[in-house]
Amino acid sequence: MDSFSRITGPGLHKLARNVARDPYAAAKYFFFIIKTFFVTLFGIQAERSRVKNCVGVFGRVSAYFGVVEAQGRGTLHLHCFYLVGEYD
Image (tube, rainbow, N blue to C red; front, top):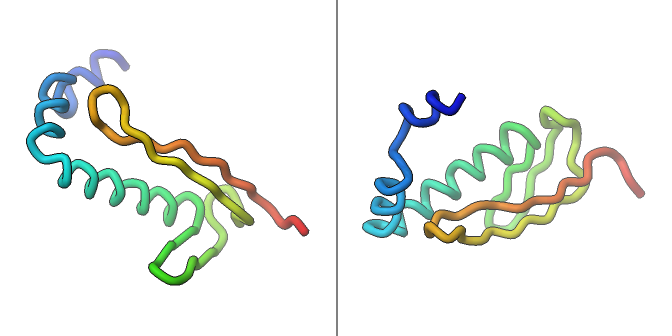
């Protein structure tokens, strides 16, 4: 797996350079990936004024909470908590 990750995509320095050159594009790409992740795995589609929820890979999500933060290299990452199932 180590050799696989070395030959795919940009290296650490090139990634940091790309993010520094265009942080807006890096943020747009990050949110596209996160939005795709939410829709595909969890069945959550957030729009401006409402959230649509259907059954995802892990079942129906009753609630979720997430925080986005920047790593030392300037790239974004997400911490999330999901409550799956029917709860009253």
